[in-house]
Amino acid sequence: MRFFVPSHSGLGRAVPLNVGTMSTSAHPPADAIHAGGTVTDRLVDANARYAADFTDPGMDARPVLRVAVVACMDARIDLHAALGLQLGDCHTVRNAGGVVTDDVIRSLTISQRALGTRSVMLVHHTGCGLESLTEDFRHELEDEVGQRPSWAVEAFRDVDQDVRQSMQRVRTSPFLLHTDDVRGFVFDVTTGLLREIDPA
Image 1: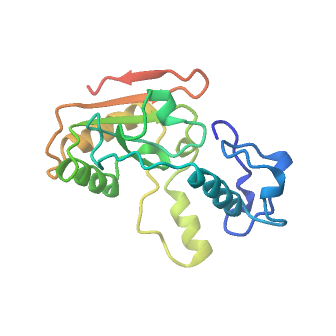
Image 2: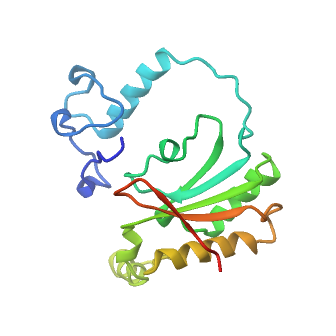
């Protein structure tokens, strides 16, 4: 799935699937796709093939490495591969920008208090789509649909500073038990390298 993404022009409606123009990790044969099917149909078909060979790994819900990783949802980032993680190693929380919102704090609180994680790693990246947005996005949505979203866009101009802000939000949350090992990074989508951000 890394670096191969479908067009976003079909969001919100069924998208006809042309197997010859799309490549993902699923790699289904052409005859496995329903004629005129959607991308979701393709994923469901891929799951059926996956489940046919699936063996329960017998893992506990608690991450082996006791770490939670907060990262952007960007389709170019194969997070587990980039960090050398295996199934069961970590909790992964992803959203647009990888920013620390109230819902991320919710997930981290459950991760720490109920499932034993101790460390938090924050991963932003170069070329993030949030760098091209502003809070005007919310007003544009209000003009279009007649209701302003209750959530903030969390757009930013300086990715390093946004990582610092995210680290500060984690470290000052009263709900989190473990805030001594919180580190932030910027992932370079052209080189695959992480650059650590000084919180100061």
